[in-house]
Amino acid sequence: MGSKKSSDENEVKTKKPVYPGNSIMVRPNGPLICKGDTEITLLNAAGEVVLKDKEFALCRCGMSKSKPFCDGSHKNREEDIAQAFIDEREEDIHSLDGELTIMVKENAMYSFKGPVTIFSRDGLSKTTRTKGALCRCGHSDKKPFCDVQHKKCGFIG
Ligand code: FES
Image 1 (cartoon, helix red, strand yellow):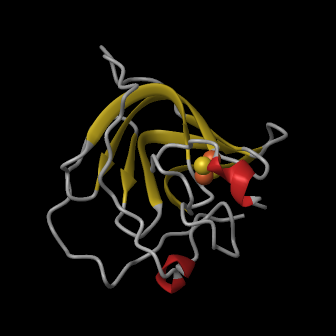
Image 2: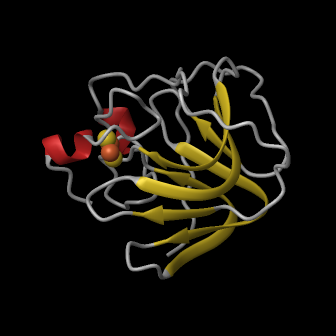
């Protein structure tokens, strides 16, 4: 499985912020752009390595036919997927050095471990974490974080 990247032609182009170490950028109506100074490990639900790469785009609308990767299907979604967020669980991280591992949970979220800066494409929302769960069904009310809506909507993926 290779890395997939997406472009969103409807996105307003602004200078995006850049953070050292691992980062996950939340694109408006688009995917999660995962980037690392070193390779980020992506695991399937069985704990097997799917990909190790310094950059890849993960689906967060739930519609990709190439899950967990973005294939541009978000462009067909009717509702907007906002990039803005507030993180009630922000952690005070002293060092952003360290490996980031993201696990794709079956019919559920992305679970991640390791220091990471999560931010919106416009730079107005930002948090730092060492663990957490990100929505990939497209239905969370707390996007980009999972709020367990995947159970209610019967997400398969
Ligand atoms: S994966 Fe969307 S709410 Fe959990």
